[in-house]
Length: 219
Image (cartoon, rainbow, N blue to C red):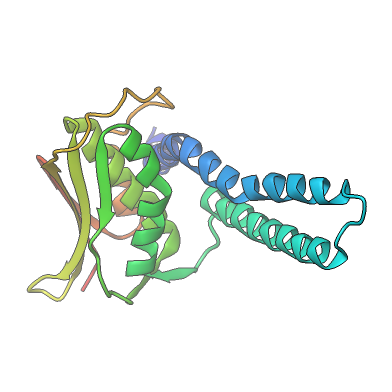
């Protein structure tokens, strides 16, 4: 019985991670298509140029360079998304860059649902665990958006508290934009106690109130 109790928390954390990744899937798929779509467009342009009686080889060479550049960018983006699914241990990222990464990934999907999502973190180059930030910041964003009434503004910011601990804050405020559209349910919502377990598994502290959530790193 004790062995089952010991396994309960890691299994719950694993279940919460899976649920979160399922909710991120639509945004990831959209971003992957964004990187790959230009390849098809440039290929069609190349095909039209090849049909000309006397194709301009210099133009064709430049177009091929563009295709190769888009292909490299698409491969790089795809490989990066794999690290969301299977995090590389010990990898860190600057807090500002990591926050913008998650906001950029979810901005379009949130906008469709009537939420204006932005990062106001500013210049915070402190390194933090990339896998922890990739899990916890989207979890906060989804959790607060699930509770809020659109239209609303969701802002991410950072500061240091009186004890010298780094804080990442997410706040929701009523907005003036479009109420958006009801998004299809991609997967179940995470309960806040699950998000708290995710935070604890990364050595962080979570505080949640109506309309806001805060992550605290150790001093």
